[in-house]
Length: 222
Image (tube, rainbow, N blue to C red; front, side, top):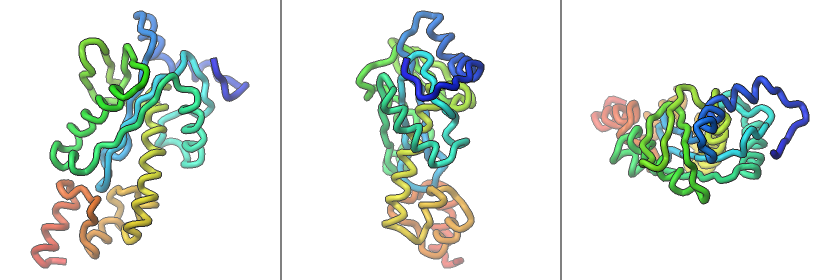
């Protein structure tokens, strides 16, 4: 077992691996965690990651990516891709999001993330969303799974870091929207920028409030 810290909090490890331990008790060996980043954003792709971790791997500060600083996420990202048995990150672009709706696009992305793993799991843990990965791969949806499962937490970090890097790239192309800060979410400054400049090519135009702002702009109310 690969370790990155000598100070192991056994109680925390047991808590984070509770669902993985339950799956292994049912004779499942390769357990993947799956999570997304950017589902609630107003711009760009939704990013989905899948990761299979070694049994009882301890990564210090592993947790829901939203609870961690960007610096800690970056450190853990490198440790996860180094230690994982298999991992994969996919993006579902705005064309599919607008065509399918964000919920269905996320489901599609989760299936692609798992299908793209070089080593296939025999069980999958997902963060809240129930996903059918086929008869050969049973799954379990866990509410707040990114805080309760090491595998899902790892996937959440892979997805979040990947999407934040995309947002930094978007910010260079469309600096007026402040994507480097808001990551595409509906902050006041972001919404004000949409009212002033209109939508960029990467805005999700079927999403409110983007859709309503664009409609009002066309009516000449802004």
